[in-house]
Amino acid sequence: MSDLVIETTKLRKEFHTRRGKHVVAVDELDLAVGQGGVHGFLGPNGSGKTTTIRMLLGLARATAGDMRLFGEPVPNRLPQVIGRVGAVVEQPKFMPTFTGRKNLVLLASSIGVPSTVVDSAIERVGLQGRDRERYKGYSLGMKQRLAIAATLLKSPDLLILDEPTNGLDPAGIRDIRDMIRTLGDSGVTVLLSSHILAEVQQVCDSVSIIGNGRLLTHGRVEDLVGSDGRHGFRVGVSDPASAEEHLRHAGLDVRRDGEVLFVQGTKDAAQITRVLAQHELYVSELVAERPDLESVFLDLTQHDTLGGGR
Image (cartoon, rainbow, N blue to C red; front, side, top):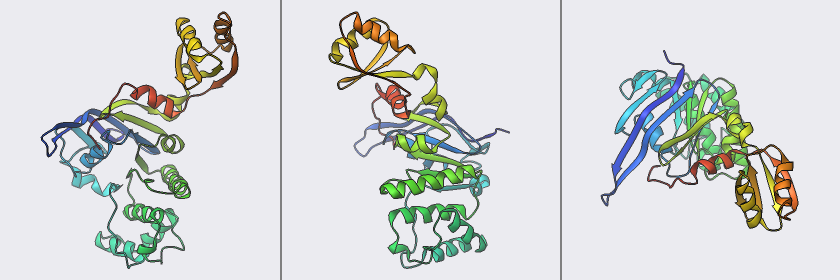
């Protein structure tokens, strides 16, 4: 029995637009999500994240490839495992004139769950004190919390969240992030689909980065941003164009950002200053930097154009 909660092998989704254009939304995607913690599913808008999630949940049919949830092939065995899965993929439908609590009580009754679990779900998403207010008066952040509470009624082992902070203000984003982190720490496996790099880096333990429906890389976030080979230096110099040319000629990797250079390929700051001084170029700034997930992502996608996935 596999210890992977989510596994896809050569997953592919093709479709034709109304104008007859052939689109490959997901292209031979291999995805592996282990048990526990928060796993980021990162990619720009249109990279195939939502399409992949919809296929996993049986909401869309795969063109080719294999999918497994908890080791069970889906969609064939989806009825056997769907009770272990909670998902917020689209805005759920709640009764606007009912309170948040009453909506959850009705939902619990419809799925055969005792109403006693409602209190626990409300507490886990931080809606205490607001649960007796009408849904139509909820902020977008509170609506997202209630949607997640609804998925928690059946105590899922896997929680899939598709862009849960879209449209939220900074305070709402922070609150949802904290809640997701708490859920991951509690033993629930969370798959967090997002196009926001900072969100993934702050919340996730591991990440799969996709572009154009293809897997670009995966691994622990700290490994992707912290490997020795990815360290570099921020270099300020009066003539960045000339400095870039000489540093490249010396075998260093250089990325220019306006008037500043980011140099990789050495751990020795003296090598940079020596190369530049030989050509009468003197640094005004030299700062060691540890790259973040954004720089990793840009390196992976700089030659990758967006496809037609979602």
